[in-house]
Image (cartoon, rainbow, N blue to C red; front, side, top):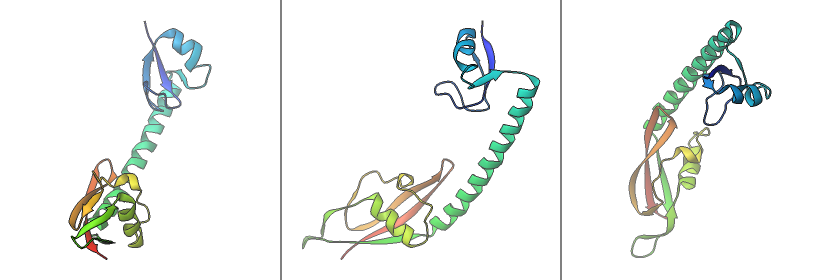
Length: 150
């Protein structure tokens, strides 16, 4: 037998705030309810769930719209990274995501974070590279990175 509960907080391996989950009666009675993590499903809880889901959907739509705007700007962006090279045109060191991010921030992309850059490995040669930038789980754009000799 299981008990149906409404989660008030995120619980690892169980669900997020606002989810309705089924758990064993002992887990509900001894842990989730006394800790204020969940409450039994009632009509009032269902109304609160509908309100939370509406708020989440509104926030999701807003963040997706912002991400699409940022993605549209990134689509046309390109950065030039100047790197020291040897006489054989090989780089001393490499170009990493932090350097690309710094160049993008100079161009006005202040909201980007290093984790958004999907650079598989540091760039170790001169040339032009396409670096994917994941600004949202549903929005990924490519930035052109030019690595030139200093």
